[in-house]
Amino acid sequence: MNKTYRLTLIAGLMAASGIAHADLTNGPDPYAAGKGFDAPHEAAWGGWSRGDTGTLYAEWDTFVDSSYPGTFTAAPDVGSAGASDAYLSWNSGTFAAGSGNLYSFSVIEQFAANIVGSVASGPLRAVLQFETVGTLADYASILLNGIAPTFTSQTFYDSSYPSSFGNVPLEHYLAYWDLPEAAASYQFTFSSAEHSLSLGQVALDIGPNSAPVSGVPLPAAVWMFGAGLMALLGVNRKKGLAV
Image (cartoon, rainbow, N blue to C red; front, side, top):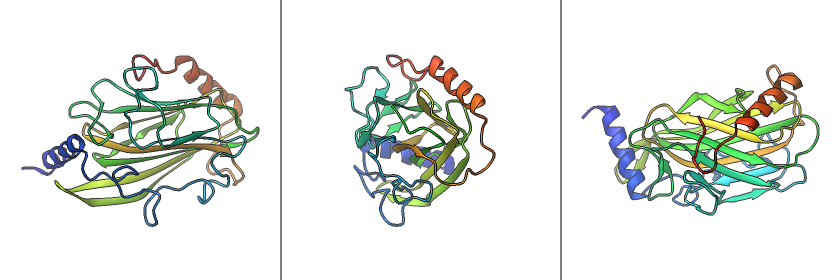
């Protein structure tokens, strides 16, 4: 059995069974010491606390909350703060497995994490953290309102994460954007490199950017144009991810 097929089979068994996924529900905790997630009050990229005035936060650990309208959508189940609206959507062919993770046996998986709310004026930092098991993400697909990140990092990686079905890759990934000003809404999009990615957790944080801007910041006019265009296109809540 070749390696690619073996990993696909193992990841599929894991997704279907709900066993041995590295997230809050199934363990280990991605915020635990030595793992890759951070809250903004302790992170080098942060400097604020979740729930502070003028900040936004939403987090998903399982993707089975049917309280949000639509076939391929889920409300944040870990928590949210400052958001007037927050939901995650995915494409047809991707489904919430028995573990609560999102998975597909057959299609490239496409995800859109959406959040709307009032934020502090001035420069902002928007942060996406996500966890995958099995197939890795397509890093070039990571965008916020159609704009590539200012910074990305693989914050934790275990190429042989132990499970009941064998060893599989586990990854925690960070991307953030330094923004000149607020947008009407924020849509973080990313996809799998191929099918058989198991999405275990997604966290969004947006707050004031008190750190020096890394890289070359986008001119405000360019950022607002991209943000406005993505807000206009949006995501169809009843039909899942818009294409």
